[in-house]
Image (cartoon, rainbow, N blue to C red; front, side, top):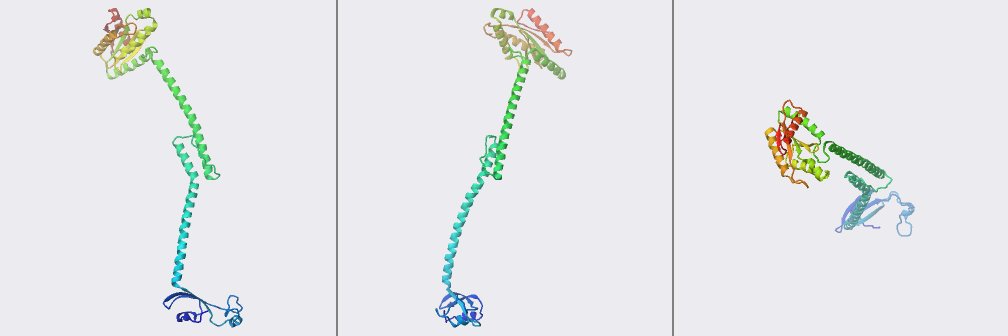
Length: 340
């Protein structure tokens, strides 16, 4: 209890109100807080003069101006404030770091199932239908994982059925292609058969007449082929027929059509080819065949008949005229070319 007060403080206490002030005394700045005591009588909180009760404690101080005044040096207060502020900032930084670390950990834990779902979905999208997610929670993410796994299983079953269907379709296409080849190709020589040649002959005659283009037909017969079968057997004869087709194919154009007409007779259709060019081609063929070295039997010859499409021609009349030319070549001594 001080009985010496600063004049400025006395003025403040005279107002009998609570308040704070900054007072400079003896070159020291002090922070002051003060509050009037409304009543002291019977109070156990206030005692004056030691253990003995004071007159104020007995009768109270009603109407008097007792105050509680607290002094604190400003420098000490600022230093304490700085210390407290530093401690608060330090604890704030530590708390922030701990919060960030916890958020990161919990964020990763929370995001892990979602990342797993995204990875599985990407794998499925890239065609890996065996991919499954291992999320087994009982929340919405778990339900989504179950749906994703079920979708992958359904896609896998669907793709398996689709692959089986595609395989079956491909096998059927191959069978149809094989049947088409068998129905249009001579099984022994690989040349067109008579049926396929007749279809192409009709098509080429129609095109030649529409566009006023030339068209020539050759009929070839291997000379003395019966002697080959009689002397060497049918296996050698078959080899001669296959070799004959190969030798002829090497001498004709890609657009020319060779077919086995029957037995040892072959026909060649020459689109956009007139009589003179066709006779030159026939002569080259005859010479090439005569020079060719056939397996086992050596050299052989062929007779060739030629004819050119006329305006009134049908497929039958064109073939018949070529056949007449071939007959003339065989009657003329074989290994020659004749034209009708």
